[in-house]
Picture 1 (tube, rainbow, N blue to C red):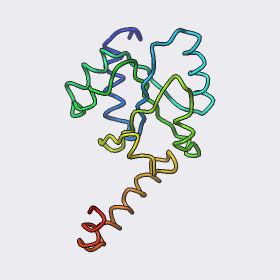
Picture 2 (picture 1 turned 90 degrees about the vertical axis):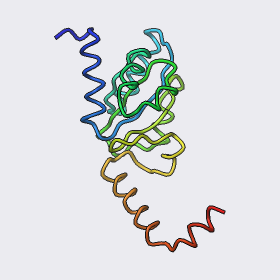
Picture 3 (picture 1 turned 30 degrees about the vertical axis):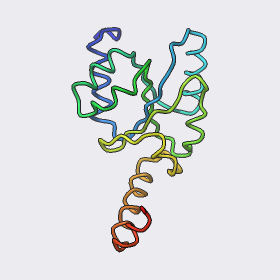
Length: 152
């Protein structure tokens, strides 16, 4: 299989969306080789696995998926990151490089924006799922009047 073909790239993107439960969307800029090498070195230094996708291919794949609403966010190359390193925090992840910016986070077929994940502490998949589960349990135990008064 030729790794430069669009079919391989298409397959790789589908693999990320179907098989990997926890990964990050980063918005990159149109980079020259020197800047991209620096970004790759920082990603490898933090033990992050990444895949860079060009604009048009990502838009075409998202239009035919359940993530149609993400198309409006894409205005350049997208970098998909996943990590088995649970010691890396979200603040460290946001400040990896000034040339890339965090767009969102996919966890169990749901995509969370940058604002929604600010309260999470670590990147560990199991820890984040358990945190979401505990917060849902806490909210479900609260009486409706307390929840309603907080919204007002």
